[in-house]
Length: 106
Image (cartoon, rainbow, N blue to C red; front, side, top):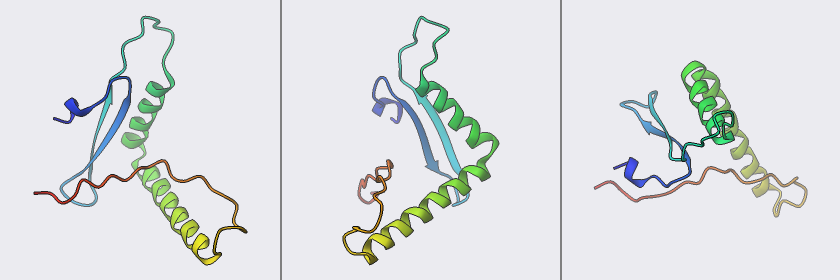
């Protein structure tokens, strides 16, 4: 079912909660068409391979980076609340992680 929901011409890195809070299952998908030029590797393919490599070889570093980003976003939100409209706060781009709510499991 997961494969059937993927769109063409995209790279996916799917993370699924494991049996406990400390484990994550990872699956990577490449739905792009193979290019006949063997010398050209699309940037998306390189990035996906790099992310998989980091997850497999340096998971602790990935976790530390993720925790640092979450802490930064929480601090940023607090600062914007405390300063009012953010006039004195340098604008920071929103996160590119989009949270989707599918509702409760049935």
